[in-house]
Length: 338
Ligand SMILES: NC(=O)c1ccc[n+]([C@@H]2O[C@H](COP(=O)([O-])OP(=O)(O)OC[C@H]3O[C@@H](n4cnc5c(N)ncnc54)[C@H](OP(=O)(O)O)[C@@H]3O)[C@@H](O)[C@H]2O)c1
Image 1 (cartoon, rainbow, N blue to C red):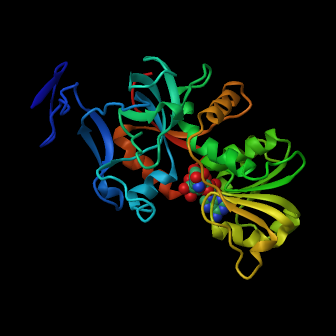
Image 2: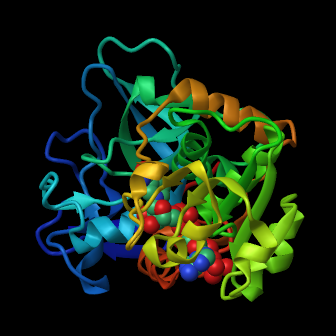
Image 3: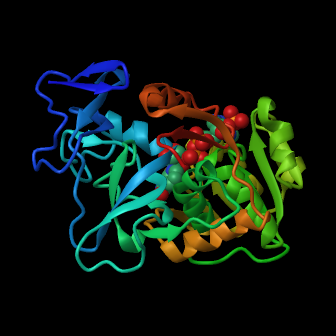
């Protein structure tokens, strides 16, 4: 089957009709995997436009934020926790326009611009349309761009959780952020400063100036060996990197120090972890909190750095950049017209 767009004729891929099976309209593009693996398993495909179920809305996406989770899902990192339905459309962070509402929804009208996070078991944000539980969406405030709105949800909610899980950071606490230039780290630095903490952060030499510009009191090149002299004592560590970055800092922690990791349950080789308050942070969608974080962006109290904006057809490049681990802030896919 062929469709004509202006003077350009496009052929549907083998086995794909431009009409969805329900005949509800032309299909959409989506970045999908049919099995777990490396970059080669990702395909940009023409698929039917999904329909919202009870409590759900369909969002026509304008932008989607990229997270390390997306290439980890592609590689099968979650397969032991919960096998995902294959083929699976990657992506969780989104901004877009509500385009259709399922039964029992009332919060958003068609045409409203929203931002949010899809459920990790359903993904679906690297596509032209996504289905999202209405309760997981927030209205995009005026004053932030679609790109910024798509960059914020997962990293913002996670950064907030590292500072509040079980015991919230208090003014005057000495906080160390490992990986202060990354998606979670650069927001954690700023949110900790907003709470009145003294904030130090580690990063590579490429991002020292960037992390200083976020308001960190001390920015440390991550390979320095004199961390104790520079930092001790530390009340709370936000680890966004993992055990290798955490290993050198155990001996500069105060007894009872809180360690919150987004990567792995904190474990001290040869030390008694019981001396510390440790936790692996995990988050789920929280539309009220996301609205508060988005308002901080709109008010200019928080900034989300977007290093690169790529297109949906460049999803593979975006995942490769994320996987290379040198991201300054966020990578975002620009998907549809604002
Ligand atoms: N548990 C959850 O719910 C949850 C939620 C979000 C993210 N995460 C996980 O948290 C991690 C961070 O996520 P993200 O979105 O912030 O990733 P990201 O944007 O890729 O940031 C990673 C940052 O770490 C820095 N880095 C790499 N190696 C380092 C080292 N040895 N020491 C210090 N910094 C180092 C890099 O900057 P430099 O090169 O400048 O150092 C990079 O900017 C990922 O593993 C992600 O999957 C978990």
